[in-house]
Image 1 (tube, rainbow, N blue to C red):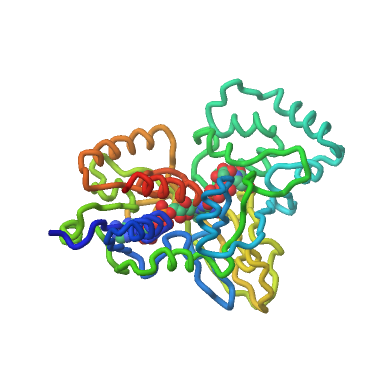
Image 2 (cartoon, helix red, strand yellow):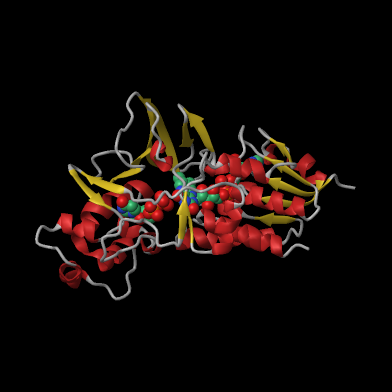
Length: 367
Ligand code: FAD
Ligand code: UDP
């Protein structure tokens, strides 16, 4: 006889949605979390009256009404629209790449037609029919000037590799528009939960037993014996003790400071796209909720190569790593008791909307 129907490893968004849904279906769940708090990477904590996104800025966006309605059931979302700004040396540009960016880059460009023509001219010289890497893909999309000022050095800081060794899909996430629209996302719905993200996870886990500071891998045998099924949202390669080798990740170090001023940079996110600064971006957290506090909190983000023992943040979904992940996923199929989910469990560079979708799809399959 086991004590629980489901043991859920990880109290991030995926684990919490599963726990909430399974509890509502009448299943008994235990959530174990190795950190000293719930929420995974969407965790926010209050500092000087400001909700600080402790593991990186998180903006919720989706075009799927079911997902939007679902998350709005756990918090009220504000009308924040992500309009990051790029700083390249002493120049400031709007992102994503749009008419505001193009007219500032080129003093003789005023209209969409002129911008398209200018990019077509630049692209013409280097166009690749089947772009084989991020550099070729980026130049195809926006030409060499935008690539050199706003993409190349930022991407190389972010991923720690030259752009011609990175997969093309990474840059396809970014919109390119010939309108004066600084909205970073194309999605229908977007916002930040008023009061931060942690409350969402708290509400999801209400009435579910949670053990903090509990690393499943340190108590694998006792914990496994407690439940009929295990949902694992940690890293799949670590779960199997790296038996086929370690998957590659990028890690991030956040340097957070409280400043005695009301407004440091005038925007939630400023990307530093030149190699002159070692960090990729600075987040000023109060602007996510239009804060008027007398002080401000900023975080500089330094991207780094992940090594065993570091916190993995971004899976590196290139061919080599995807093939290695497949070997782990095949192995996982042999254990009927075990389900891998979430960003690390499925080794996918997914946004919150994808995380909600896959968790709800999983729940729908359970009677
Ligand atoms: P996680 O949040 O990583 O949760 C996994 C949990 O499992 C963690 O709490 C971890 O401590 C715990 N755990 C792991 N191993 C063990 C173990 N052995 N024992 C016990 N506990 C364990 N998405 C967006 O939609 N918009 C954004 O703006 C955005 N920005 C992002 C910025 C950064 C820097 C990062 C890294 C991600 C961003 N994302 C964003 C993606 C978003 O964070 C994920 O989609 C989502 O948080 C994934 O949730 P998860 O539950 O899969 O993983
Ligand atoms: N990117 C860039 N310049 C920027 C912002 C993004 O070149 O100012 C590239 C970079 O390669 C990055 C990718 O676009 O990895 C995707 O950016 P996004 O902001 O979606 O990344 P994330 O939010 O996941 O860090």
